Image 1: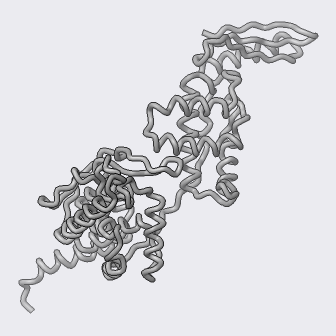
Image 2 (image 1 turned 180 degrees about the vertical axis):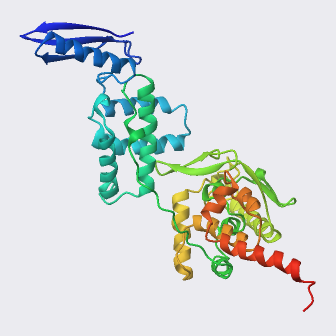
Image 3 (image 1 turned 45 degrees about the vertical axis):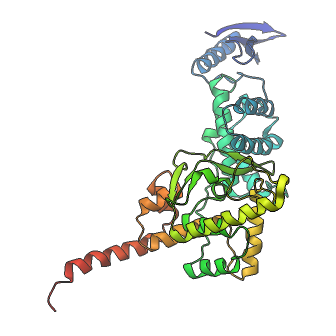
Amino acid sequence: MARGSVFQRNGSYGYRIDLEPDPATGKRRQSSRQGFRTKREAETALRTAMHDVAQGMGVNRSSLDLGTFVDDWLETQRQQLKETTWASYRVAVERIKPALGRRKLKALAPLDIETFYSDLAETGSRAGKPLSAKSVRNTHVVLRKALADAERLGLAPRNAAAAAKPPVVDPVEHQTWDSDQVVQFFEHVNDDRFFAAYVLAATTGMRRGEVLGLRWPDVDLDAGQLAVRQTVTTVSYQPVITTPKTERSRRVVYLDEHTVDVLRAHRRRQVEERKAAGPAWFDEHDLVFRDDLGDVVNPDWFSREFARQVKASGLPKIRFHDLRHSYATLALKAGVHPKVVSERLGHATVGVTLDLYSHVTPAIARDAADAVASRLFQSQPD
């Protein structure tokens, strides 16, 4: 329970409030203010300040600056987060500190944070160019979480980021290939050592990290299925094997016969590569897709290699991730039930799938209308 008192010094009055010890350090904390002309003014201000403290709004809860706090806070998150997620938090913290690091937690206001977001959107990238709304919003998520913990620990009077408005992320219009373009690309990369990876992505909608993290023990070619149990991503530009982010991402994916045949051929080719590499072959992870010595493929390099092949093919430019979007679009247009598509993609809900591919749903709705009408009226006399 906070206690307060009024004092007189140098011809004016002031007040002092003894607060609860700092939760982080255990040190004694005080809040004080001086310069009132009369004792009555000081007593009135003291009552107001005591009320604010009781309501959790004390203005002098911590002398910590934001930069020091987020550095310490980030270390506390290391054991709670996956390495890849923690690395993304660190990127956000490095964006926050130059602009807001010297601000005291007790003085940080929502307007300061919104101004920071605006500056990021204009010149926030490493090259001093505009930062995408998605990246700014990701920074907001980290800052809001950090300040929520600061408020919970009594180090900040409130979570200023909770009242700040991050930029709105506009829906992205995905670039996709139609079935003819996918086939054309397959013909172009037919002899490429990653041909099977491209086919697998296009026929299942698997993510880049899921394709590169796939292990042979998780593939049952006789049953025509595989299990997604791990993924490959990058931390500080180095490949890292980790587990999928969500439980829905851990899933069984059924394979068509053509994809099974492609994977069988790929395995035979990989056996020959292993023989050619001899003792230099790296066989620790037993991955389906590897570099030429059997080690993990760097996802960033893999994306660049895909982009090179797309350019050489003369087809419209897409990213490797857009093979996933192409699969989903083709599947929905072919009449595959959205729930089945959602499960194959590993989405959290079928609603996520329908929102992402809303451009396809009108065609589905028209097909549904025609299908029902054809059943209702096919036996009607002319």
